[in-house]
Image 1 (cartoon, rainbow, N blue to C red):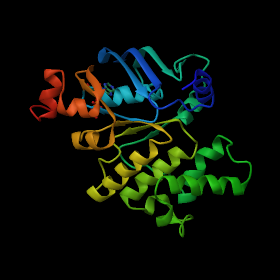
Image 2 (cartoon, protein in one colour):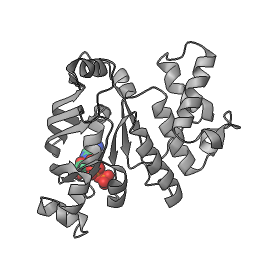
Image 3 (spheres, rainbow, N blue to C red):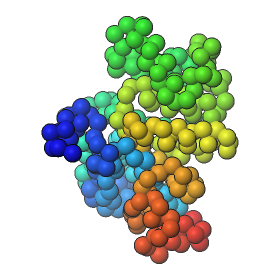
Image 4 (cartoon, helix red, strand yellow):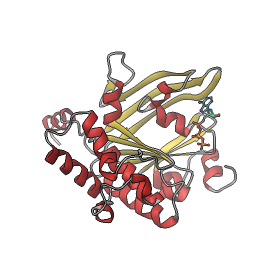
Length: 269
Ligand SMILES: Nc1ncnc2c1ncn2[C@@H]1O[C@H](COP(=O)(O)OP(=O)(O)OP(=O)(O)O)[C@@H](O)[C@H]1O
């Protein structure tokens, strides 16, 4: 592809598939004296799903939270190293963290809709970021976000009812719609299916696969089957270190490291 179009795509906020969207270089995280993440470097490619796997406490969530500076909210947490979004340092002192979190949204383990109507849950972000010029505009954003999250058909007749009245799987798709509504470029998901039953999990996994057409996704999961089903690339962490990172198929069929092999074959974890 000619360089001119690459420059245009990057300016327009959408990097090309295969290009690096988020880059971490030598990232360390300390919680007080605890060195929780050790010299982690990895590239997250645009329009792919990157899965972070590894045994409990290995630092997956810590790394995920570095990517939109959620660790800033944890007292005593300190991050060193470089993390860039489209080449720009996200820890730059002049950067507006609220804007950053609109560009890099997050979906949590437990669905956490606001105690508001389904409509207002999705409208919340666009309202605070001033993304809608009129109420018709806002309605369009809400409807299209619910559609992209695969929830609209199920809730279109009860948009004014509380989001907390939906089933767990629907609540999680509502949270995904809420994240999408501010047009993020990257969506971080921290075990988004761990509170869901298998049918709701399948729906969210299907959705993740559809979303990567427009977004870059990073997902923490405890389920190796899920990582294998939804991701293109997988990073295996152990005791705060990134042990192996590569194409998902290669990681699961031909891991290069003994530790990775031990984990994926269930020898520990
Ligand atoms: N707020 C915190 N304060 C102190 N230590 C923390 C904090 N959060 C995480 N840790 C520690 O940092 C290490 C990495 O934790 P993290 O939650 O990132 O691991 P994880 O791989 O996501 O684990 P899990 O799969 O159990 O969620 C662990 O040893 C954990 O105890």
